[in-house]
Image (tube, rainbow, N blue to C red; front, side, top):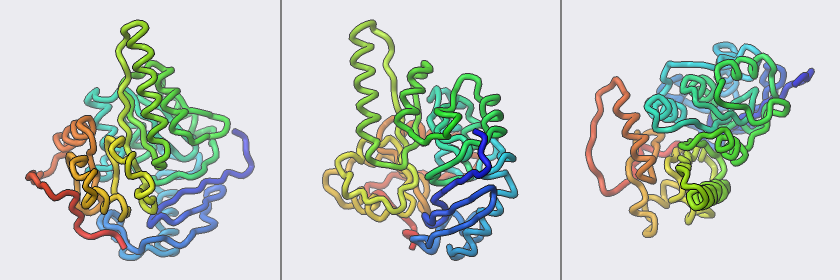
Amino acid sequence: MENNKDIHIMEALGNAKVTVVNGKVISIDKPIIKTCPLFLKHRNIKELNEDTIKKNIEFRIQSFGLFTKDRVVEEKEQIVSFGTSEIFMTALNKKMLDAVVIVSDCAGTVITANPYLVQGLCGRISGIVKTTPIKEVIERINKANPNGDILNEETAEINQVKGVLKAIELGFKNIGVSIAHPEQLKEIRQIEEEYNLKNLKNNGEDGIKICIFGVHTTGADFNKYKSEIPEYDLIANCASKSLYSLLKTDENLKDVLKVQAGKGVPIYALSNFGKDLLLERFKELDKKIYICTEDNLPDIQEMPQ
């Protein structure tokens, strides 16, 4: 963990790849979209460009120590109504999940049952591509995570499939996992199926249940993974035109979507388990809620451009 140079790469606002070295933003790739409803609403960012992205990342570094030894690791504040971390936080608080497998800067893949650690580590980040382990942050995570684990403290490896296997090894049964790569779907479902077949057959143990939450979908071509889409329990649309189009128009997927939360950057429940988690999140909101049935989902206010 001792490094003179720590490097962190995150696909952030507009899916722009941002590189931070030793706490300083050193490069920003061009974003693939120019607007985002979430950042317009919460940070009043009207256009995503190199300047606005840099200012936002620097704000995160200064305000909660993103990518640095000063990283805040626990948080109770709800940043958005239906973020991945908020939904997982509610599910852990309500004992609908035993643990979740998440990704954090400064630590990589983390397995935890602490809902406030989930919110602290994931509430203000997006797609972490690469990160460097930072000793002080890892120590704070471990202190707040007595029943969980970090996949690899020495390398801060990001590997959600290995994280699921580690969660099973730790004895968790109802496991949530965030995945940014659709190709991991089949592997995780196979792990779930094989574990349940083996253990139920041999000793009658309770099986495991895995909630797969698709995140950071902007830029992903879901036409390549059309048959795998029903394997998600929950998925964020982000700015994925292919995901929206397939769920909207594909005859084989028309009955997959159970519940949609939000219209700016919506979250979709694609299984009954995902539906239960999403509805439980609705119940926890201290806001007015408008509920109606709709056959023609998904419905997006305006696709980010």
